[in-house]
Amino acid sequence: MTDTAPNHQPVPDKDKRVVMLIYILYFIGLPTIGATSLAGVIIAHLKANEVADPWRSHLDYQIRTFWLSIAIAIVGSILMLLLVGWFVLLLLPLWILIRCIKGFLVANDGRPIDDPKTMLW
Image 1 (cartoon, one colour):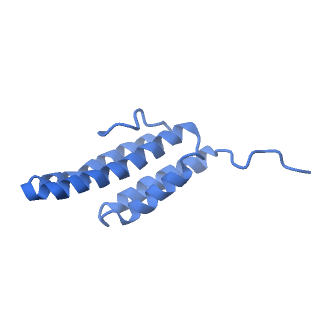
Image 2 (image 1 turned 180 degrees about the vertical axis):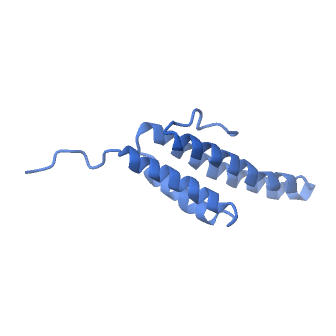
Image 3 (image 1 turned 90 degrees about the horizontal axis):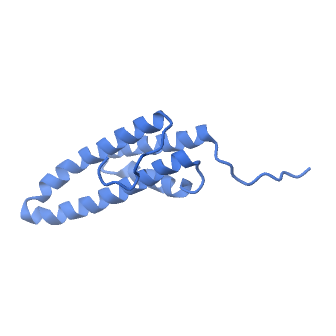
């Protein structure tokens, strides 16, 4: 007997675990200057088309958080020449932390991110 089911069907609990794992990798990435965050964004990119709708918004949010943090770090590094960059680089971990806490709490409740494209939270 052959199986006619599609190759992958989203499993809500599994999808939630993936999203929560990525948030945890981002949390751990804060004191390690992003080492585990890189693993998290790779997982997010790989799973982006495989998860159910409420979790897709989290992956978009996580991917955006990673790439925006890279851009902000580059801008902050350049602005260090004007002494403003230190302030930008000091606030960057706080910005990441707030986004991750918000996302983690929303994911824990099983809800999607309202606006995954936002730069704030």
